[in-house]
Image (cartoon, rainbow, N blue to C red; front, side, top):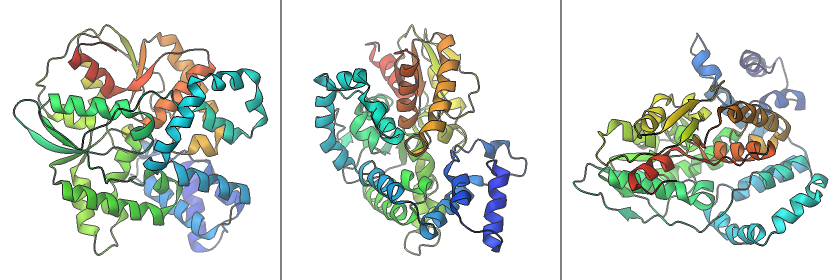
Length: 390
């Protein structure tokens, strides 16, 4: 029942009324990564992703979780999809890291006394530096080729701001005027993937309103989970009379940063980067969006850069939205497996296209005693264009 076919069978029997949504039934869907690796492999072309998301929405409507589970999930969704709340959290977390308290507590072993889920939250924490603010409008360098909107994300906006800053610099250097609406909220990806449909649809409507006012040619995403979600707004809001057509138009404009740059003939000079890079395919970029060759093309075009392929590239690293927070044992096992495949490559840096994967890989490599930097693909291109190195 933990195979895609088994889960589809469970959906069918529940729909027909021959099985009940019991805790055991629910567990088969809670343990699914939602990595969508089954979809490109399916000879029948079953859209398992939509089946999974709709089923998880039904679970949240009809199934009563334990009190701890409810509180833990409520804490996740009260924090991570809210950039302003994350911004308030930045400073105490930065003090926690900079003062040495984090190092002291980790060495003391006190975290072993905490539940695994709370330990997962701490181990996935990024190293926080100074915030890099993205202007609401950044002009194109030279003749303007496109006016693009940038989806800022939530965790990435506040905890990995260097990714958005690098994205803006690269787009501007390639002749794009970049608009990053300050009133944009969360895109709703975490909610959609976890079955919190009502809140996800409300956020989708807000996102559409925000970018309609921006009047852009394209909407650029640089977080794979967000990108796969906004490309599905047309489907998610198909029954909303006020937004169905607008959502389709919005989704049609959405592209991953690697897609946008591969469609634009290069204008800015790429300076050499003498680094060996292991590229990790994010599941929601590779499987959900079908974007696989474009990031590799961008990296291959950087002089001096050596690209190393990670074995079992199609297998998830264990991040999968909030999966590593709610299923820490399975996520840790997947992360360890990925780290064991990366280490022998002797890469100078690991590149990926999703903040969740970035944090998961950093944590997994650290458990194996390796501090190899994990960065977003766009940061390598930014370094090549700026000629300042990594």
